[in-house]
Image (tube, rainbow, N blue to C red; front, side, top):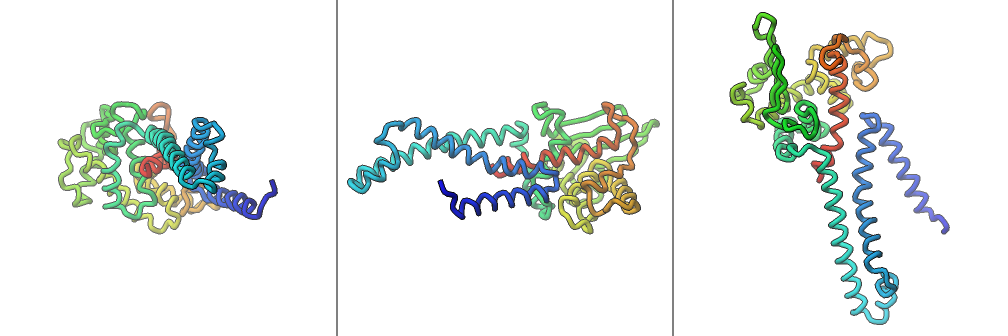
Length: 315
């Protein structure tokens, strides 16, 4: 078969677009790969539907080309046959399409479906300029899920407690105590003081208010996002926002200053720049990981989860 110009144009144009997406991917190719997968999935569904239709109608009289030829002789009969083929194809496409949709939804934890609409509402209401609304669900997943199938994953009662620290809820709001029992910090009380929208928030009712749990992490993240308005790239800005959610805004700003001093670092960029200048402790803390390891992993893990929630929200 002789290649036409349109074939060459479509092929080269598609390769150029894919190359540009990978070159500008803020997540080092992960987001682009997930995007391509989401595009390919319905195409595969159509292909399987077409193959199933041909397998079910494998006799010459049902061949679409023959039917079009017959249409010249008897339009009514051939037309009815084409309608029947279209109905079967639509049914098969619906079957395979639902399977693809189910596969997409199976990527997220079972409990997530219950609270995803709430996460979307709170995010669009209080943080409309977030680069992707899927960031908040990805953050909740990281904060609340030991594993995707754990009973406390995406649960308002999810709790991590040690003798001197307590993290609770979808966003793991935390309070910690000193060795003498005095309060060292309390992120819930701090958030309630800063944001009037959280005046009903309290430790005693927190487990019963998933809406306020999500609103708190949205407002805290939005506040940091606004402080970082000088960072022009929205994905670098979001990564820094996430690093600050885990390790504190003061710690992030100190690391940006260290980056500024270095000759090979741009404090306006997280990936490959600020992320290399961690000033947090390198001593092992939990499961052999240091505060520095935990903070850097937090950003990478949340960003890895964003594409699956983007697909779930589209579905």
